[in-house]
Length: 385
Image (cartoon, rainbow, N blue to C red):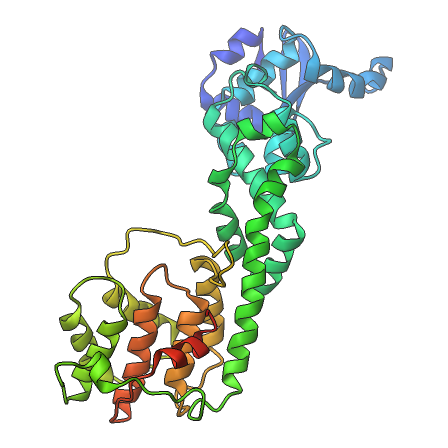
């Protein structure tokens, strides 16, 4: 057992010695034995088993939380955990906000992320002396994210798109809340309730998109109302006759990017017309999209929240990946099915319309033809109008 004369001696000890003490779980200071509660990152006085004082261990533990800062046990805890880099790493790498908060607050009574938020909300900065603002912020955001996933909307989304996608979407909402707003409201329910509506909107839009895409797969897309054709003079005023050029003109006419993408469109159309790559393969689509829209200055696009049906780019991408696996690459109407899925799920941050039209055009060119879809057909396929 590692022994010290006093707390100051432990404070001067190398980090490696402190790590060894944590691994052993016990130490002796001033002739008295202390034990470590690793799950709480807390040091407590060890009482003899046959001593009547042992009956008060639980009371001592509770007293520690609010007791004198001069107590030996509290000083040992400060040295071994609060100011020790290895202990900080242990907290930051804990599996949940609850585990993190139990160690930070020395409170085994914390059972849920909502309770962690409530505890943070009633704890001021002075009470967190010695704890970095970065750690507090991470704990707040982690607890808030877990609490959002625990909501009814969060659980429903998780069932549809999985934990990682749901957590990624939730993480994008965290900047819209703060520890200050939590302390002002005084309630975790208020902060969580302020962010849950975005998950509710996403869930609604997801249901509509799924329902529409399944309906598209049941339709005869070669017949009315899915077979309207755009007037040649409307999109091809220069009178191109080669199908690749006609397809590029059609895509460019509908593009809202504002750039001159003619050369890029024609190059991709010629290359993918003959390279035989599976256009229902999500990896191929990501590769093609990166070349189609190479310079995107955002990492996320949120869902439509004012009456639209657009999914966020995170959920849209996940649903598109799922949906592509249900498509038959040899189906005679796979081009329209791909257009419907890419534009309907809107899984890319930008360029979904161009991508959908490019895929449709490629399936047409591979069939040695090109029939320009009319806008009304596009709207019917996407389900967004």
